[in-house]
Image (cartoon, rainbow, N blue to C red; front, side, top):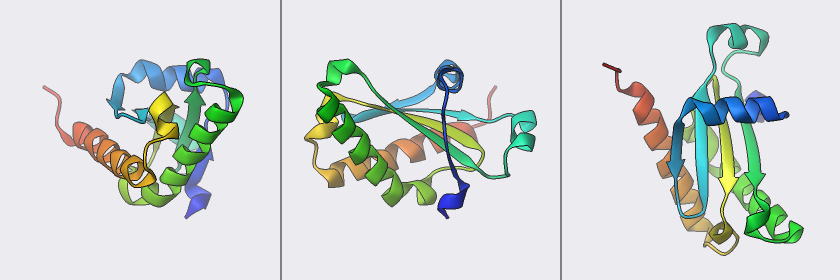
Length: 126
């Protein structure tokens, strides 16, 4: 199942997702999402999900930032394939409290955020 999971590698990809405007804020992280357009999907395998992680220096030292990223990656492996949609890009922005937040709460926050972002896309725009 992880074969369909890709990485966001350059700044342009992160900026495009940020500009899309779809995000959900939780105590431990902020998740931003963008549905890829059809021309982009043709260059990538179908139903591929790409993920990126970022943690600001405001969160703490390099050790703390890396710990937050590791915790977010672990939560993604538990939740992502049951809650995330195909052909979408996600960016997880770690917050300071993610380092100390109980892992079960971090996982439940992630489930909630991905479900809410998915519901936003299912609602027809007027």
